[in-house]
Length: 434
Image: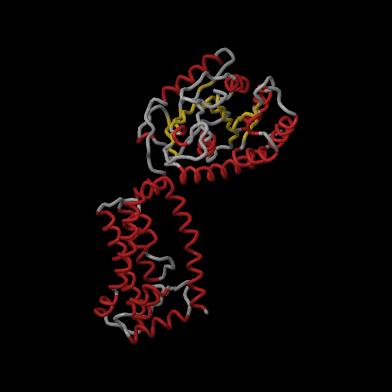
């Protein structure tokens, strides 16, 4: 079917965005590719069971790539194609380390001006016609590939309805031979379960990207290279799709079961009792989410509670020695309220601190100024310890119940919480300033 005049204009518009390729355009393309990768990685973590990448043909959990290392130099990626999710999965993986464009059917992606804008902005397509002009469009991408942009080609030409890898077209391999680029086969497993052809909503299923062996192509072995790449992808797809947690979940869980994780919880809480402006429960809540319903969660909570007690007692002792630690993000009214509560009802003052938004370091310092006896201070710390155990245990149990949903997107949850925390801190500070 001949391309329409509107499609030809859209193809020319997109090619003008990238060509002629320059160092400045390459940097911008790398930035936009990285931004798209982060965006689609977030989307996949929220609406699927996560995206996991494996390097090489050894497809087992130990072969999972924590940081994908793509081959250096000009590179063309060929992959099987069963779902629209394939595009965003590859963009999400490749765009984190290399600028990337996706060869896409012009008649499908460039149906109108809005389609052109969305496909170019959200995916980063390189349109290719499905008629006699297709090779011309693909060949034009050679300048990008030679400059360092990764070109992704679904060599089957269209999505497979039954999941079986169809015969590969040779255009990508012909281009690789012309510009001396490597071809990297990537098998995409699980995307058909997430969103098969015709589906409108994704299902929570895992997606695996399995990187094959990069190969050079010459003009003499184009057909052979295409057949070998197809065979390798077919072989990689025989392995079961593994449902593994996201990288952030694994990193945090590793910390939760390490001595380093316990030390972070302890000294973070110590610091909060003396000067640190962030609450003691922050690392505690992050770690206990990942441990499941194991006794390790209780150890982490207890370590944080102990650190908070040590920090408060240390601050109390320092003030009695005439040493006053810095107290950022506090207001004079906080010290006044804490002082009055400690002087009138020292045994219950820390109960009020559980809810009023005044940092515990303020109460610790005022307890030192009021010369509260050590034994009385220890008794007064009971509500403080209780608060840590309530928040920690609640998060621990909630993490166990929601682990299926949190495993792929814990990084997003963590980032959102950290972004919202300064808002709550500012609100509390402004309240006590008034």
